[in-house]
Image (cartoon, rainbow, N blue to C red; front, top):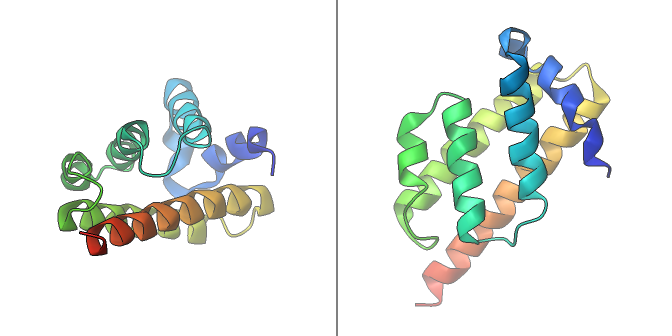
Length: 122
């Protein structure tokens, strides 16, 4: 999938119509960088925290600084997953937007799975 189409998502999420151009560029850049990171990397944590802030979830953003195998991290990741899933519902009329949000949902799920794997391997 080409992630250049991700910009379409920025106009489709219900509350995104009020986003400024710097905000649109910021979220696009965060998700683009996410595609370049390994699952569980420190950079991935930072990107998830910034996405949580972007969606207004300050509590989850703070929890995303915990270690990958911590329950707090998984709780925050689940909250972010719920938020992104809601955004997908709002973008249902745009196939490109849904595809890009599907990528983000899949990536968050992959990270959640890695978090559980590390937790159980201790």
